[in-house]
Amino acid sequence: MAYVFLLLAISSDVTASSLLKSTAGFTRLLPTVAVLTGYVLSLVFLSQAVKSIPIGVAYAMWSGLGTAAVVTVGVVLLGEGVSVSKITGVVLVIGGVVLLNLGGAQ
Image 1 (cartoon, helix red, strand yellow):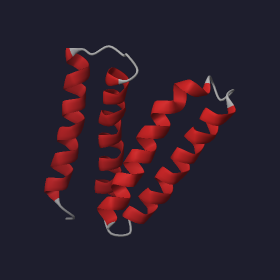
Image 2 (cartoon, rainbow, N blue to C red):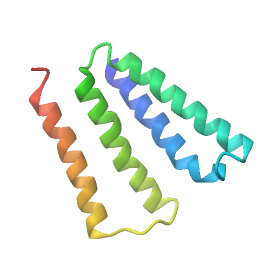
Image 3 (tube, rainbow, N blue to C red):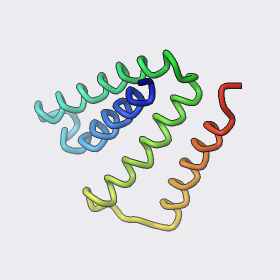
Image 4 (tube, rainbow, N blue to C red):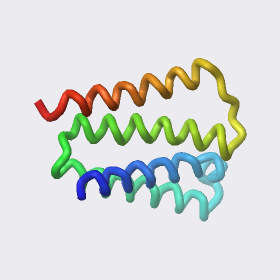
């Protein structure tokens, strides 16, 4: 169940981050409420996940996979450019998350 909470935390964070631009600097009410709600839910779900997952692993997955997902949303849905360096960065982030998970809870 902890990994379900972690996936919900990542999804909430990615959704909130993807909507940030639509807030126009927090001047538009509905997008602002959606962003703030997403971030609060993300932290609530993350706090549940770390009851069973080591904090270093959970945070690495939350931030790393969330970063990769936000980059993907930016390229696919928001029309942001893609480059070799951007792809390399995402691959390195995911690789770091994999290495942390392979290390276990030592």
